[in-house]
Amino acid sequence: MPFIINNDLLTQTRTTLYGRDRLYWVVGGAGSGKTTICRALSARFDIPIYDMDAHIYGAYHSRFTQKRHPVNRAWSTARDALAWLLDMSWDEFDSFNQAALPEYLDLLSKDLNATKSNASVLIDGGICNPGLLAQAIATRQIVCLEIPERPSTEIWNETYERKSMKEAIYQLAKPEEAWRKFLEFDEQITHTILKECKENNISVCSRGETEAVDDFAERVAQALGIQQGHK
Image (cartoon, rainbow, N blue to C red; front, top):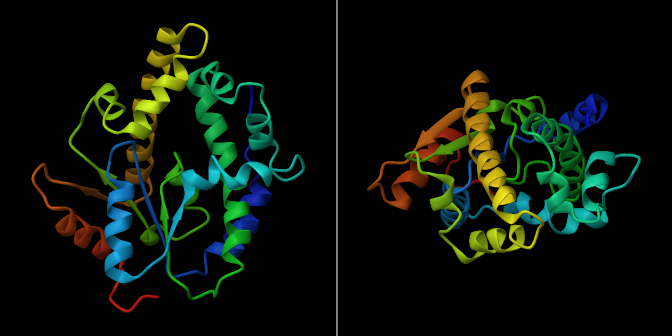
């Protein structure tokens, strides 16, 4: 099933987002430490966090419209949204993620329009295609987190929240096959994020195995150009 990127919508969101010099976006695969680092940066620099995943899987659902957000509307209104995604091939899933991104940015833009244009905002994850994101905001305002390679099976058994995903998948038909496909998609997402970051000169910060959170957060802040007093 083909999904089409709405380039007009992407252009519209760029108009709102590109001029916001204090908009910072932390991307990376599952388990790369996005939420941990965003919390550390928020505490240190007093910057509010915009949890993109929480919005995509929460508040955005009631805001998706058929006219402006047809891709996400199809997903959010599917009889079983999780099964709907896992029935796709990787190419279809990647196409869905790319087409969904401008629709997310549209809703993000509306939220940011309610804030001052020079206000600092730190966005936690939520996207799989930083190369496309780089068409809406400056690459210097995006940083990708990378950790030493670990299998997805290990990552998705780390926390209660991640374990709950496996529980949800095991409610589907053919759960073993669905779980295996989910893990394959997860590894492909991480690969795609890193590949697109390197292709688009987006900073990639790799955390050392023994590196403290505060030390890693400091390096991420430097990569993003965040300085004390940003509010």
